[in-house]
Length: 122
Image (cartoon, rainbow, N blue to C red; front, top):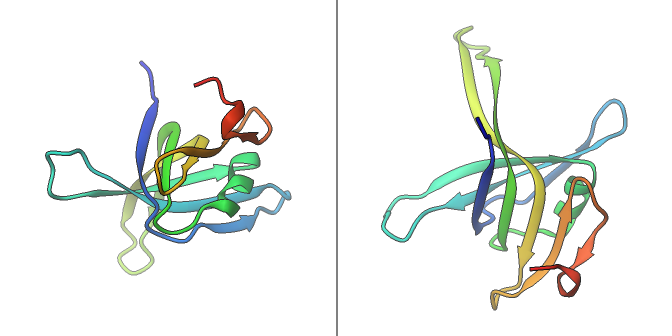
């Protein structure tokens, strides 16, 4: 079985960056995803670590991004009801930012250094 997710859409929350206890940079934001036939949108949380999180510094609300990653879930305890709840998110290993005119401006992957859009092979 393959767990791979590709999502492209506008960023709907300002990226939040934090450093974990062991010094690793962590970032997250929400992206809106819809297909051309749907009137409603899905809002998906995107999380990234290290170089991917570092690239989130350049992402702003309403920027168009393409995310490559995998779908993961996390179990949390609701403090009010003590019920177990699950939430799903995309663990990003690549974030591609597009300019307002649709051209690719930057790309970063968890296993590579920052790459300018002109140097990308696609």
